[in-house]
Image (tube, rainbow, N blue to C red; front, side):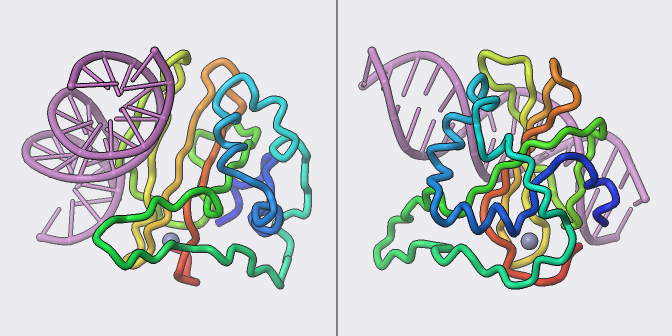
Length: 152
DNA sequence: CGATTTTGACCTGCGC
DNA sequence: GCGCAGGTCAAAATCG
Ligand SMILES: [Zn+2]
């Protein structure tokens, strides 16, 4: 299912490792528009590739358990953004995503699409932003970690 | 027929 | 407290 995943993207594993130490929340904030080009992490062509990077179990802060009735907002730690160059409109990473919204961000004619993993028990979210000006660039942001090994 | 997309409305956090 | 911007819901429509 990685057939369409050819373009310059980053291996999830690699990103995971880095994310642990990097404040992705901050990065994402700056990622928006304009500063994305200056984002080293997204620029660096980590070509670890979709080969076979076995051991990778980063992310040790999946959720914040609350003992009250309030929900702690999980900040960072579970967000991964990728910028890939692709002409394809559909970026399929092998999981089944269900689109649940789209939004037009201000100060940009771009459209942002919101997806959610349709696997039961897995609430991973994904956000894909297409670039109209740079039609070849797409920003993909993953939110959360899949708790199921199976794709689809 | 069930799953998914579509789309505007709705909710929420933040800044003023 | 209000308004904006971004994020999510949900009903109807659509797809396979
Ligand atoms: Zn999942």
